Amino acid sequence: MKRFAPLLCLISLAACSGKAPAPEAAPASASTARVATPWDDMEKDKQRARDVQKAVDQQAQKQQQQLDATQQ
Image 1 (cartoon, rainbow, N blue to C red):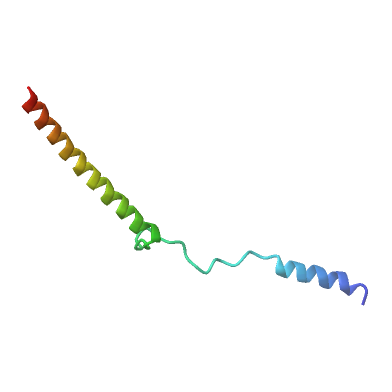
Image 2 (cartoon, one colour):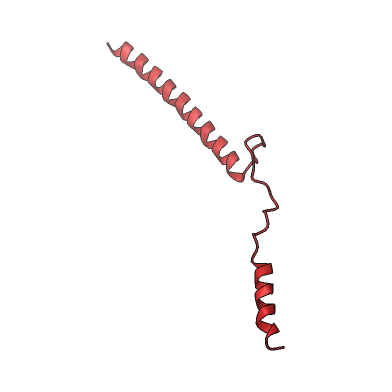
């Protein structure tokens, strides 16, 4: 019995030391749709704010040009 214990341990270690199982979830491919995140709405709001600021800056520039034209 003492001779079989180390042999049994070696056999069980050899059986358990195989390759790791393949992951269950496949990696996302390029063809899959993008998942929406909570930050998407914030990014849209930031872009909207940039657009509004750009419009305000353009309007201020036009007004400044009109003021400069009337002062000359």
